[in-house]
Amino acid sequence: MKNNRQHPRDKQRGATLLLAAASLLLLLAMAGFAIDALTLYVSRTDAQRAADAAALAGAKIFVSSGCTTSANCTAGSTQTLVKQAAEGAGAQNKVFGQYASIADSDITFPASPTGDLHDPMVQVKVHRVIPTLFIGALSRMLGGNVSGITVAATATAEAFNPTGSNLPFGTGCIKPWLMPNCDQNQPGPVNPACGGQAYLIQNGQIANPTWWNGGKGGVIGEPWTLHINPTPSQYDDISFTGSSSSGQVYKNEIETCAPEATLACGSTVYTITGNKVGPTKQGVNNLIGGPNGQDTMNYNNAPPFQITAGSNNPYYSPGTVGISQSTSLVTVPVFGGNGQLCPGNSCAQQTVIGFMQLFIDQASSGSKDLVDAHIVNIAACSSSGNGNGNGGPPVTGGGATLIPVRLVRNP
Image (tube, rainbow, N blue to C red; front, side):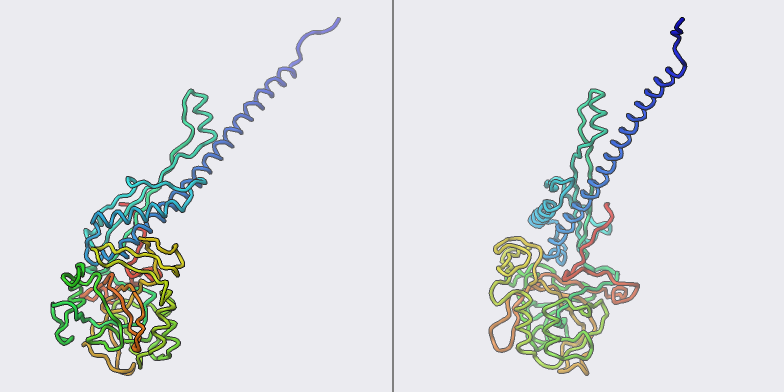
């Protein structure tokens, strides 16, 4: 007679099938969770990169506008340009395959922790809903409608003007022109060493930090013609090596950011012999893309000054208004000497007490190689000594930026 009893192994086969199915479901869930976690991690990294780029782009407007010198970066017109720059930079960075969309409400202007108005800050938030595999499926199984998770990132950037600070300070990409601490366009306070001219920097502070306003105000936007005589003119040629007076080296220092063209507060500089007629004009035109095609800046209205791209601007289309990067923006040192420089590097050792950022308009077509420019920013070294090369490595700006722009911890 046939035995119809179920063998125990048949039950084991059924249990194994259930365990295999459950394990497969668990494995799929773990794989889905891992994919979601990796997607969110990469998207969060993308969002942070976009926020960092946007914050730095916005802070650069503080520098080019001149507002760090006048300590007036809270003006609505300045903040509007900062927002435009931040949003434009965000639109060039992708978050999970799509360009970041930054709204005006995502951009705020926190106060500096030190309360120093010379150091404005901008904060940018980037957020986007990222579609998820496991979490979306689980939500739908439970009757929900969640299809993704919002990733967000925040970045805060600061434009640091060392004026009034005791922090050591320096900057790179210096052009080989040395400015005396003399301003013939201001009524005072008078620097006795300058033959009746006014100070640019006095006791570690900017003497006249307001807008030029057609001669009714201070130094921001003030016209500045560079030529050989230190006073009553506005510069002398310098060497970064201490001995070289080669016209070719001097021209190259105008055109490029040479490694040795870095100075800090308290650094020693040397003048070089000769007016360097020819190399000055050649170097300036090669730098700014002149004599035609260079960028232009509008000084007629109160800061922020807007820069318009010329036909030779390597970064922007010709005619673009409100750009933040221009080869016409240069940095030069200011020395605290007696206003009279010796005609040669043997007796012209001078000490840096600050820096000036200029916008070069053109190299004059005259025989003296005049350089027409306007003042955009001034940074004063501390009068206490802590900012004069002491107290550790100096805070520096990157590239041709006088005022350092840096990411800081979110307040």
